[in-house]
Length: 375
Figure 1 (cartoon, rainbow, N blue to C red):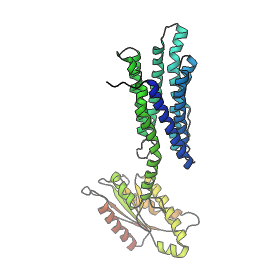
Figure 2 (cartoon, one colour):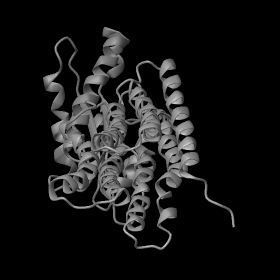
Figure 3 (tube, rainbow, N blue to C red):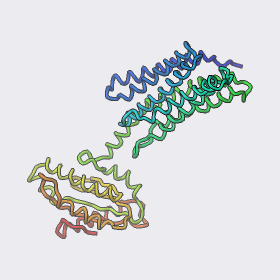
Figure 4 (tube, rainbow, N blue to C red):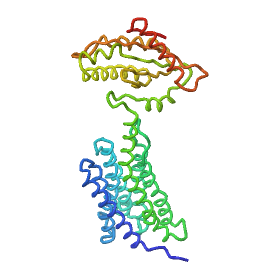
């Protein structure tokens, strides 16, 4: 039967791995200086390596050394949190983040306190139980926060992989505690479990963090492809992607067209015409979001609003939108809007038929004098 590597060999493997990841984070930061969250993750890797070296050279024979080294392990996890918060555009530090560090320190300090104050005879192996339990609380807090920290309205990303990797240390710590307490006949093997877990989970943790920037860049590209570059509202592709959320019997489509928009361009220039479209998109978009709907620009001066079923009805919404040009921005020419309204019937599985009816109503409104709503 093959022998397990000794703990010194495992510590060396962890040391080489964590310094390698630290160098990768630092090297990537040198090419993207604005991404300073990488410095937090690099610092976490280097500090973890320094703690491993300190354990090998100093051990934990004194209370100060043991509590201090466990506290530094807690700091490495907090640095991961700081980097992740910075990645999300949040302040990197919050006062509650001292809890994981204090948990690691208190877990190790308590056995020493019991020995010194209570006169209890605690051997070295038993005293390691407190440290393992303290680290269990630490990685539990940090891992759960990572998994739950995804910003609202953002797609899932690989932070849950990093968080799950941290939580993966918990079984190893708990099994080690049981081994130290004599629950298993081969407790000496169980003492190696945290370092054995390190060989797998350390790589998963750091690779999860490394993939976050690439995932965010891909998400931004997908979002940009679904947005109208001038107004920032959805384009046809975005409208197609969003309609599934709103599609139901009784949902409505409001087709919007700017009356005599070509005359605005001809008289005031295309720059002013673009400003008019931006202003309309901003105001109509605000109304659509308040009603739980979505706005899209599907042509030059053509917009569409998808609305969920609402007590007020789409016609009342369209009338509110029609009145918006009366408060045109200073410096922009006035305009009017023609709008067509249609509802989704119970036998329709897309917005397309209702959009066709709304478009027909829109042109009926134009034929009857523009600046009005037709259904």
